[in-house]
Length: 493
Ligand SMILES: Cc1cc2nc3c(=O)[nH]c(=O)nc-3n(C[C@H](O)[C@H](O)[C@H](O)COP(=O)(O)OP(=O)(O)OC[C@H]3O[C@@H](n4cnc5c(N)ncnc54)[C@H](O)[C@@H]3O)c2cc1C
Image (cartoon, rainbow, N blue to C red; front, side, top):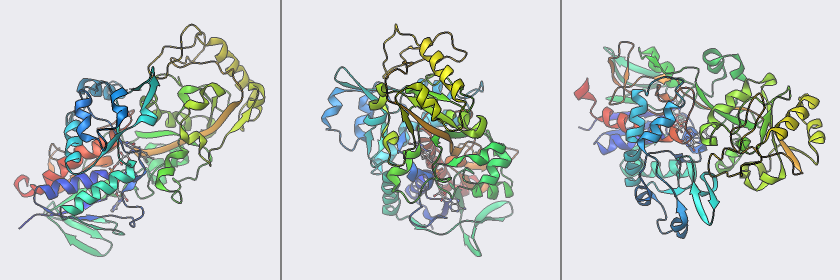
């Protein structure tokens, strides 16, 4: 008889785990806390962008929805080696060596994409956000090139179709509330008063980013002010259930992905908007201008690196400022380069023809100090280097207490615009420790029989930062592992 597997959650990690378990011959029941509209968790809120190691366009073509797109002949995708992916992760480790989980992510990234491709998931180049035009060619930058067709919603739809094609069953409105155990082995779950038995359970039910209490308790007081960018369902249920049966908490528990978001957006991502519009409260073009806090000071190097490598950290930096907000300032020269989210119908901004007038409009900001900062910034801009957003152009500033290292253009072309932002939490980095086969480990590093985990729930993958597009890939890599591991559950006890 085939193994009975329960997968908790229905995001990308859960889908990958479910598909892998079905492939290995198991029967799979997926239990999702949300109704059908909010099933798919954070995955559905994403742009579907996935980072993976590849040599050149030959690795990309088989993954594409439209390999005959004429733009491909005038596109430079470059390559993104495992060594570069590793280096990018190490850059955010705060001196920590590469973790075993990170090594798994890097090595498993291209195979996971090919595996998804084999299950009918189609991808498209991210021309609008990850490339710039130079001399008639589309030049990709930053190692992130593909997103699922129709972004996160498309990824969920394509994965759900593959899961159901293989015979998987999904139940909505079924929040798992506890794990059942017998002699230390997990034997099923409780959904409210209902007990459901299984040979193995895979937890893929997200982090604790949507729990104000857990954010405050585990990450610090100011995190209760954060906006929540994704699903309201990820309230740490899986972490609590696993630790209740002896699982080890692992990774950086106060680490998270957080980005600058519109200060006036709802506290939770606006569920009344179509999924394709929900990401429009994000505001991540700070690298084209500067950010000022309530004291009128800059507080990060806005041009430190490509925004893929800074956006997930700068939400935290904004949240740590007095009053937990900042203003992003741009001039008309970069208007055409600002992402569509700056033209979103509900984007908040002020506009003026002089910097002095603009500073007077920045609610909550010391206007004279802000004007002094902007004037000093303009005076510090290196005019001898040409602006080039396709690369780290080295167009920097001199003589400022905090430099801007790239893309530093003078704010000199009216009208000037300023957008108020705060920090929005995307997902948490701390979680559980898993073995090579995705089994959840106890404090002594032995496996809890019958219990597996994947996705945001796996700790040790991200620490003090995040190269954009790695979360979905992590879910696919660890989901595959957990699904295959769970299907073999008896052989490993
Ligand atoms: C706005 C936004 C944009 C993003 N963009 C990208 C991107 O482009 N690329 C990228 O790589 N990453 C992106 N991310 C991060 C990405 O969403 C996550 O890394 C990834 O989706 C996590 O997948 P997951 O399956 O672990 O969790 P989720 O997709 O969140 O799935 C968890 C599921 O578990 C369910 N659940 C929770 N508790 C229970 C319970 N008790 N019982 C049953 N079910 C439960 C939830 O309802 C949810 O469906 C983005 C995130 C957000 C919020």
